[in-house]
Structures are given as structure tokens and as C-alpha cells.
Image (cartoon, rainbow, N blue to C red; front, side, top):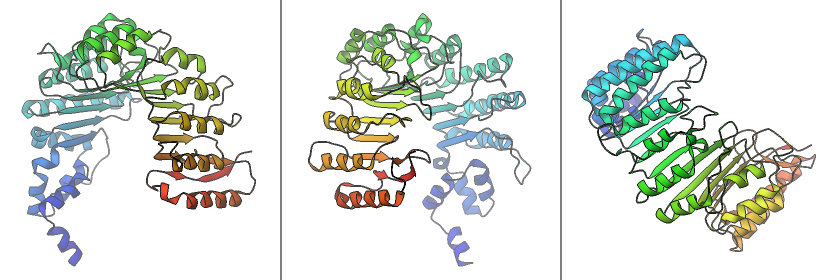
Length: 440
């Protein structure tokens, strides 16, 4: 009883923090506990950031999540500054129809009373999935376009990933962000997987024309299928005073055969001297592909190479680690390698890379590596020959240190000895190592 009384009597600020960890359904339920909790639920601070995940799960009150969301939008939509909308089932036509109606109503409720929306995130629509009919897609895009046209003066962050749009559809959405102005107020634009796979967005002049309206960008995230000389020149001319970060994802199914000249990269770097480029390669690590894309003029700060569990003969990384990546040694700060290198030991190459890249402070290896590599990397750090401060050699359940030894206990003991030896260098929250299985 004392514990329950203490919950009732929590200060308002503490209650707001508790309510922030609840979804909107649980907030409505909690509001029935007491008059004080009811007042807390109506606090504007509680609704400044709101995430709506489309779901048909029923509640005890026999109201669906969508009905409750619309009620919340009507009551608290005027307070929302950061709105996130997530749709997780684009394979059901029945659900896509319901989502379309719900989204239209939700945006209409918020649009009528909200004038302070700063960021909008829409995730996982997947218009290229089988559950979407052409007519439903058009209705969703029409509702979204109408909503954005009324928000374009204040919106600073727009993120719409995994939409799978055609070029004309995507450009129409982006154009709505600068409907009433010559240039958009958006500072951060994230359109990774915004367009469908296999689409050569870079070849459509409409995309370059639309992108030229975004003259205040500080962070731009997009796929490599959007990159061309014209796009880089547009960024150089329109965003040179503001652009700080350019994130580029290159998937094996994206159009990536275009040649982007080093001159275009040089001009962009010259006009935006503080620019950092971060590349993410998904299942596309062939040396000839990487060398065609990664021109040495790129101010490459971060590189992520992913092959997953695949093991293709042409996906060897030795040349990439010894010849290509050292080209960016003066700028590179973060490197993540996720690959199946069961038949290609890379310990010496990774060690050499840490020695050559003097600004590399973050190294994450999800691959087959030897325990001695950990000791060698820590020794480089101790000797002042490397700036590594974050070293991760395990993540999730499948990426670990592998060993040739049949007796893992001996290897684990050796790892503990290494960790104990360099304990002063290791921050357990940032650096971790783990042995999980024997490499056969």
C-alpha cells in the first residue's frame, strides 16, 4: 500500500517522465488512476514527441489503437512537435486500406490545430509490396502532400524511409516541403530507400530540380542511385554554407553503374569544407565496385561494409583493406566490417589499417578474427600508435571472435588475460569482446 501511495504522490515532473515511456493507449488508461494523473496526461510536454504505430490490436476498453490514436490527435495534436508514424504490415490489402483512412484522419486532426511541428518521420510504408493497390497509394500520397504543404514553413526534419516510390511520386512529396517558398526550411532530410530499388533516380532531371529547393540542408541521407555529378554540383551551389553530413547507402539492388567524377566531389568538398561523407554498402563489397564508387576526393568519415552470412568468391576484402581504405586515412574515423570471411583471414590487414589510419577511433568487426588481434590492437593504443577508443568484436548473436582451437575454455582464458592486461584502456560500455564458437 505504501508503494502505491508513493506512486500516486510522485512529483509532476517525475510522472511526466514515466508517462513518456508509455504508448498513448497506456497513457489513457493511466489517466483514470487519479485526478493528478489525469492532469499529467494533459500536459503539453508529454505530447511534444509522439509515435503512432498502426496496429489493429484491441484494448480492454474495446477501442482499437487507431480509434484511440485519432482521439489523442484531436485532444493533443496541437502540442506535437515531433511526429513519427510507423506502418509494419504492407503485405495485407485489408490493412493498407485501413491505414490509408486512419492516416488521412490523423493528419487532418493534427493539421487543423498544429502550427509547431518540427519533425516528421514515416517508416516502412513499402509501396512496392503486394498489399498496396495503386488507388490506395495515390490516396496516401495525396493526404501526405496536402499535410506537408501546410507545414512547410516550420518543418526542419523530414524522414521517410522504406517507401519504395517511383521517381515522380517521390519528387512530388519532396516538392510539397517547399510549396509556399522558393526554398525549403528542412535542415535534415532522410530519404534512404525512399525510392524503389532498380530506379536510376540520378538520371531523372526532375530529382535534381527538386533537390535544388533544399538550400538549408545540414544533413542529407539518400541512396547511391540518387547520386550523380549534377546532384553533387547542385548541393555544391545550393547548400555549401550549411551542408555538414552526407549519408549514402549503396545496396546491391540499387542502380549503381553510374560514374560520379572526382571533380564533382572535389568541387563539393571545396565549397563545403566541413562536409563529412558516410557510406553504407549492403551486400556490395566487390573491390571493382567499391573503387568505382569511392573516389579518393571524397571526405570519407565513416564506412560500413556488410556482406552478412554470404560467402562469395568475389567478395574478398583483402585488397579493399590494404589498398582502397588507406586512401582515406587522413579523414576516416569509423569503420564497421560485417562479413563472412571464414576462408579469408584478415587479422594482419585490420591491424595495419588501425596503424595507418591515424584518425580512426571506432572499429567494429563482426567477422572471424583471432584473439591475438585484440591484443595487438590494444598494444597499438597503449603505445600511442593508434587513436582507437571504441573497439567492438561482438554484436547481436552471430558475430563473435572465432577460434581454431577445439577447446574454447583455453581461448576464453587467454582473452581474459588480455583484457586484464589492458584494463586501463578498456571502457566496458564501449569496448567488448566475446568468444562464442569454434571455427571449423
